[in-house]
Image (cartoon, rainbow over all chains, first blue to last red; front, side):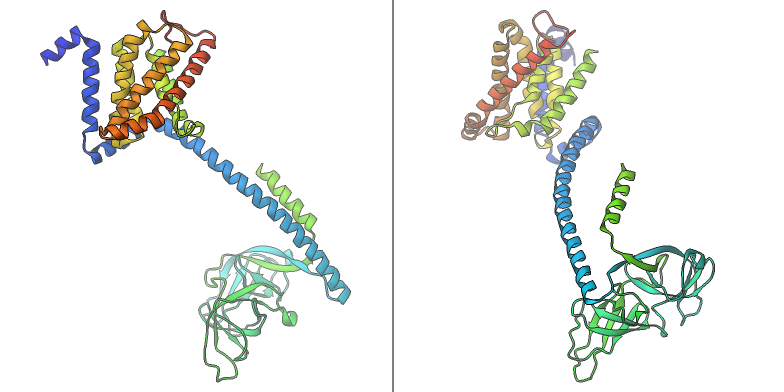
Length: 281
Length: 165
């Protein structure tokens, strides 16, 4: 100790240099795991502001790159949308020429479930919108993922909705891929059976079923379920097809009542998008 | 105030060294901005302070690569001492000589670093030295001349008697 203090008094700079060199060499020869651990502890303390600033610049770079990619996607989607809009106009013109009704897209009235039925065999829910909001009996009701039921009883400020998981409801469905039509009936839980499908008709596991719009009870095109299992037995006239519903029917909270359709107006959609962007800014 | 300036400069240089420098590399060679900072800070300082500054900067640099903890601390301590002890006395106060000083300092730093990373294998050390170190040292010298030039243009700068900042 005395030697060090003597050296420090006589040759302070050389002593400090020697100490620095020895400390560096000791660090270099230290245990690898210990070095990494202590370096991590020290750097997280000392270099925190540097690391924050560095990660800021790195994130700016990443965001710039992401922004560039999103711009590319936006441009391609704008072209795609323009093309689809032209197709839709052309399709509507052709439908008009053939005497079909014009395509329309739906208006949704959001509502919340305020009560559930206590009957085990009659599944229904009550929502907080009624005749005052324009709800009428027979209107279809959808969730975020697809059809859940239809309005059966309307009060001034509430409505009762009969869910799909009822023996009294049958829904005419269409296989989205093969366009085969069948009737969907509830079995148990979220499981349904697709009936009146011929043994030679093309329905496969994983196919999506949508409402067919036949009978004009429910509007066409809403997803209803996914084919879970198709029986291989082709000796019968029809096949056993199990379907699982799109919506979890026992945990419904927010729903949308399909109050009607209206004509497609791409200008209106663009204006809406513009308003949303302005609000975000 | 000097300590605050030194810390601010160190933070800026470390950010630049880790985020920006790899983008301006030429044929795999990149300038060592920490070395430039060391030269700026220790020129015309006492060797004692120069060693402490060098060790601190090197140690901070080592924290980024803990496997060689102590490597840059060793190199920068020696360089801090060397620059402080000899450069101020022997090198005239001109941009060209400061560039030469940084060139030699970068080469000396690389000799220490290469010997440690290549486990004192002369073949590997010489190969890397001629392949990367010469160009990196030249790059560091040019960057250093620019930094000294910019510092010289700053209004209200404090110039030390023999050219340090």
